[in-house]
Length: 343
Ligand SMILES: *Cc1c(COP(=O)(O)O)cnc(C)c1O
Image 1 (cartoon, protein in one colour):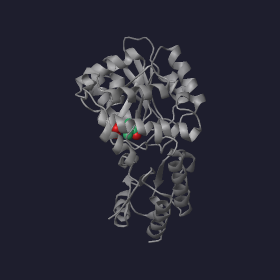
Image 2 (cartoon, protein in one colour; image 1 turned 90 degrees about the vertical axis):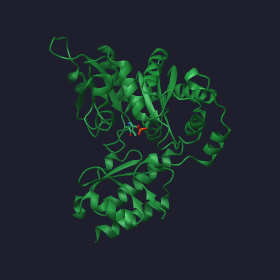
Image 3 (tube, helix red, strand yellow; image 1 turned 90 degrees about the horizontal axis):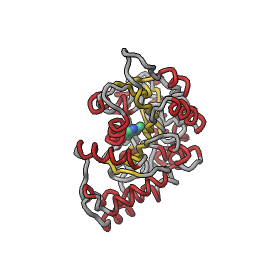
């Protein structure tokens, strides 16, 4: 059975061009830094984001966690958003790997502001941890793909600089934010000391993320990556797809945003509760309370009808658009939902 798969943009398969590039990729042993394709990908990622260097990671989680390990010391506190991936979805990695404590702050639709961050920064006192890092998630996954504005980021940067605290941006979907706001990605990444972004989500590569930052930061990250078993060998076959993710797949993200908007408005018309102000990129969060059914029950009903979605709470469903989902698929999902809602 063919499914319309809205569970995540991680379900995207490599394009035909990616598979060809993977087949033909020039490779070497990357622990010796001898894989030319990986080096090309890392340089391209660094250049696009305006950073000195990049490092290929097996996953976004690894990129985030290694960034925290480099930026902080044991017993530091890390400011993050209460529903952020690095806090909510990374198996307490900040505590385990960095020996740091998370300081979750509740954002406005996932977005933190400079004042609340300023208010959470610790002073000098024998009782309290040092604030070692500020993490910003852009776009914010659990809030439904919401974006930081450049002004918001600039204000946070000012606070961070005044207190000598680095900023790590979990930019798993930073290219979605850039496309949605019509700006080159480096106009968003310039406010962060380090950025992690996923090649394996809407950009369609089969595996991998990049961590970018200053050269010295990246060299420390390389050691931690080795420690965690992430030193890869002839992974140029993967990097070859990553290069095409960055050169060929960014501009088309706008189609996914259009589809998310059509889907969100269509479902809202059916009486489902959706905060349409959060439909900024390719994720929609649907409150299904009005159907009288739990998310779990609806996930099964959708599946019977050839649609895969994820429950994100007892009465909440997440739907994510990507290049494997067409405009016709969106109409189909709206049609099926209409039938489910009307019983
Ligand atoms: C998906 C995601 C990650 C982690 O990426 P993986 O490659 O799945 O480990 C990190 N942050 C955010 C915001 C994400 O959506």
